[in-house]
Image 1: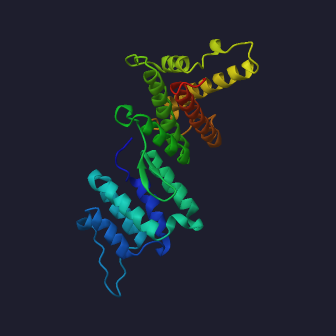
Image 2: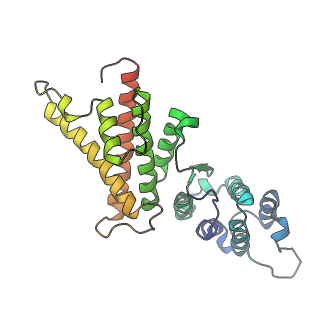
Image 3: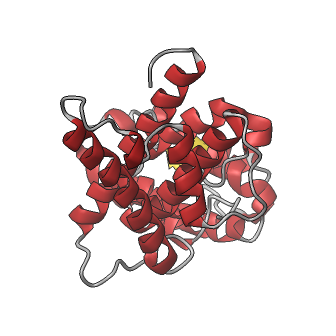
Length: 274
């Protein structure tokens, strides 16, 4: 995932909020550009009676500059989003398509756009520095960002991998070096008592419980397979046989599996029955 939230797609999506003269004023755009340290790259000057670049084109041009200057790009994105928030852009029902497109564009480069129009980082989860809080944060962000199924599949795979490692290490088992995906599933399921062999046949509902655990395992396996073939980092397209609504369903199921594993882990660690 890129650390730069600005590229040609996100720049164009931001500029859509200024189409036809709508959105914050030229003065507000100037303020955003200046606060990002890119004022010297902005050629706009107001001259009475003279037609200058429109707001949409101006935003596109400055985003092209920011794309090559990562140190300024996040500041520019934040400043433009701040101007849009103050202008009420994220509360306007007429902007539903623009918001959806912008959220999808940001998600594909590793950034989450909240409902309020603020940027948050998506991507690899650092358990050593963030711990459980990092998992909960990424889980919440993934719930909000499934407008781009290909990108969401990538984030879902990273989240599930982090959850499995967290469960294994948190339960006192050393994590093997460079564990393969099947091993992560087996070890994490074993620590959570999700393995089918531990379900007592004499307990009412045993067959249904086994089916639930098998379904969770299938989701994890499917997300990994789809991510390896068609998720983020492997192109924008989905497999021919996988429709967009099906991909979104898979991502939502991945979120549910992560929630199941974490809630079971919490109960296990607190001494409750698993």
